[in-house]
Length: 129
Image 1 (cartoon, rainbow, N blue to C red):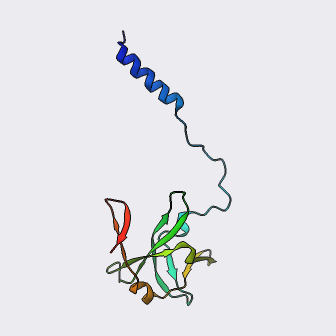
Image 2: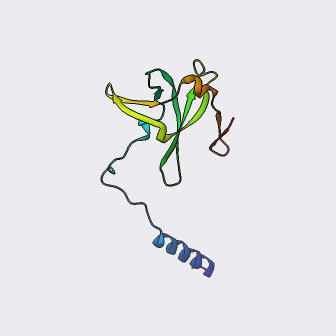
Image 3: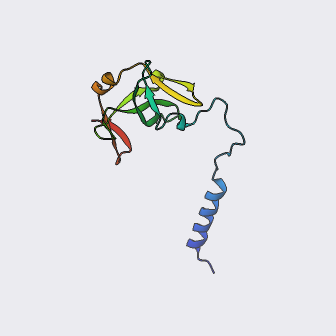
């Protein structure tokens, strides 16, 4: 036999389950959607088609809108790379050779001289270096 505490707890769990809402499952891809893989870990070039870095992260706001790209510049074989943040509106994507090419109107030297950022795992956010 259930005591009144167990009955109350069971009623509360049942009420929570009945009132819980679930995310809608889509049956089609939203129009004008892009995948993050179009940007994440992609090479970035300047207008002269010189590689200036790679995308290390894609920043989004609370609504899911992409706001900026974190680009790793400089260094050699992954050592000495500096992460800078470029506004997403300053990045151009063009189709090239069955893929995408990202371009920013900056030079590698300009980006190497820009303010750097480091990723803070404890707050899961980028902080000034």
